[in-house]
Image (cartoon, rainbow, N blue to C red):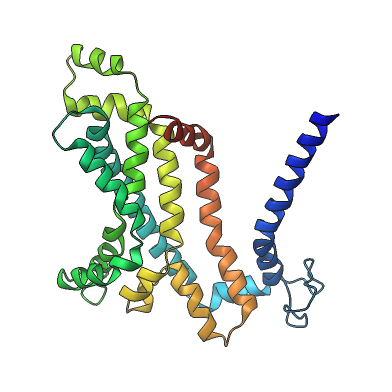
Length: 280
């Protein structure tokens, strides 16, 4: 009986916290489905819409260049994920498998950068971006590069990949070298396929972070045609005099790619996180 009560208490707390965490998202969905005749700021809030309508989604879709914003976000998020996977893996491998002078100093220096928020280095990064002409006023390609490069690699990604490579038995490397593999072949053909779960975890976190990034694009971008979804959705507030139904609908539409990407990669997620947490 005591064990049952303990399990019940734990599950009750977890369910309560989950509902509390997901409530803003539920309220957002409810708001996006409410018609003009219903007060979206009523207290207590009504979760089930009384005036149910899809008109808010249709309105957002037709009145703004939602497809254009979506394509821009996909280019930026896709480029950021790709570069993070490649560069983090290439940095994590020598930190895990190779011996060289200053290895520990290099590793802990990289970890220390996690404590520095992007806002603290945003001004010098912006000035560098301007000096390199990586802004959309030069060309669309330059604008995309300027959006991607500041987030092309992260200390978290390097740490995660280092932990993943540490979890591979050294006998695998030795066997590959005996078979005639070069270091490059060993890295790409033997080790990379073995750390796919960790790569998937890194891809998920990077995609979510890049897709939802608002501050940097809002500072760098000058042309509306280059807006990413977060900037475009925020622009709805001015375009429609704070039509919160449209803003809610646009926000829900912008989260769909994140859900699809996570569901596609979820089979690797738990195993990959465990690999990164256990090995030291």
